[in-house]
Length: 519
Image 1 (tube, rainbow, N blue to C red):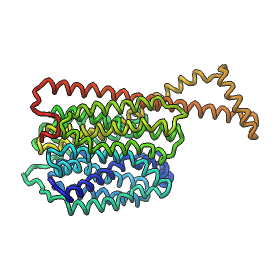
Image 2: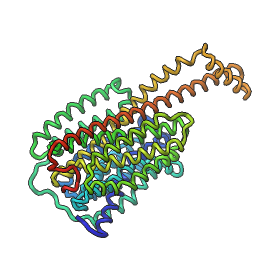
Image 3: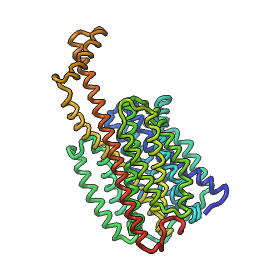
Image 4: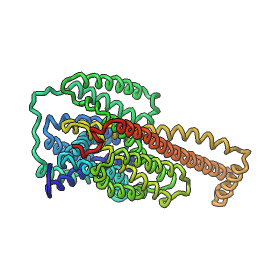
């Protein structure tokens, strides 16, 4: 536990490290086209720059508690910052795509370690009665990072070279490492003679890594029509099943799955998975809609996300105080899922004429809803764990959020593709040569293009091309609206799950209240 100036220097350092790690989960998305051209690679191959980072993140996050204990939390944390920073520099210096993919993997290893270790350090920095505040502060990074990534990435791509997406991490990482070295308390390595669970590490890396590749690349390669997707699905299923069996059997596991005996942590993990699904899917779908349908730039899209993000950042610390006052986390979680459902419902009613004024209120609901979910779920997940189990519980909870995001993007992407096929078929039933409106539109197009100097046959082809473009635009508009509605339904359904936990708790003597004020 820290006090005064030292305490708040640690807080600023931790939050900054969390933000730069999560910024890098989304900042690259807006620069894929530029990278592809500069590196002479296809868009499909360049997407591995995103995939490799996500794979590394999900592999390392559940191992952070084990590694911090073995190496010493301070040493492990500073080492992770340095690895993240050096890998960022090497990403910028890369001369070809596969160099960049490899360095992004190492950047993800360093970055993923920062997430859970940061949360554990914050919980140790604050007294037990203020862990609600610690959760509120930690949530700032989770909310701000993914949201400002596209803004920062869009600005850099528009005004600098793509390499600066990675170079901006260097001064921040160096400052964080120096401050951590000066202000974090020394931590000792575990010297109890525990053996390293190498087999568990192997199973985790192969199982989770394979699953992440399937989720990241499945839609691009048409899922099980690609042999390697089928093979990796089988590999991930077998290895993860063996991992669960092994970790429950071995004396000193790399992931202590026994902490999931806590019903509170287990239910929180499920809801955190859904939170990750909605949080990352919304940040994925909205930019696609805004840029492809409305015609906004990456930077303009990012700016639209900012008000909701800033609102979430403003209320997060107060939510921590509310939890400390004894308000049960479930009530805030219900409100959060409700506001997230409203965001999806309002966005599902958008059209081709919608603009920033139409998006302002829904995006505010999204930002505030995210804060109302992240802060209580972060607090709720570890609220009934023993102090020694908190790092492992936090790591598992963070992994569930990242996995939820990966599942969310993969499934929403697939859902959009399937809905696009269905919506196109539906639209084309009305676009026929016998339809008066279609005939009039084509004739108007022919007249327009002939007035600009095209021959009659050229004008016909151009008019049909314009009609096809309209159909495609309408098709994807409807598909994105379907995706927003799906997010609304999923969030609304989670309210029922939370209500079950309230019923369970009120049906028992409140020996352990589900707030952090008990610790």
